[in-house]
Image (tube, rainbow, N blue to C red):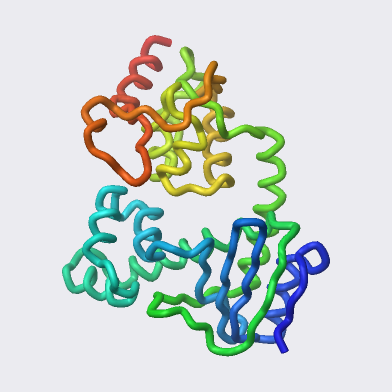
Length: 277
């Protein structure tokens, strides 16, 4: 008999603890409004996770970790139509495009990316079905649930704080006229550089997150750090725009997800401002 209920009565932390302690194998399905999550387990280990399904999780994983660009993701997706992630991964490895270790690590990050947001879900129906998960050619990993629960709980606390500090995402950013911190004193990761390259009063924070395939938590954390460092300021647009404005030279290239304006000379501008101080 399947275990089922509502997150109002049985939280995601309690569910994961139960699956971990009982070393369960099966699939946890959670539905909330128009959102759906599917988590697969084997012997109490998290092996796969999707949010709302659809596209190849491998392509999204490689895009998320910066191994491919949005344009490359669309090209690979078109050429790999009908192939499973395992088949696609093997093709990429044989072509020398990525190593097995890089693909596994990208998928691990993707599984966690799809799992951590569930810690903020306090409502929604769930159903756990025992048995070998049907992942349909997906690339699976093995992740200890103890670490997932610990990190997810920490992120929930940080998520609540970030929501208080940065409640709106439909606002824009601009570079501070007189930054408090030198860029040379800050170590930025790949995702932070991506966000910086799209900072423009015409691009909302939400648009930047969507183009870079970032969760609300990820974009809030990065923007909050930039605000605290005094590198950027919030701009509240006079009129809400449905789509981001494209750079003139890219406007003729249609894309599935409209690309926000990219400030390609961002770093030089920042350095020039710092020199003027």
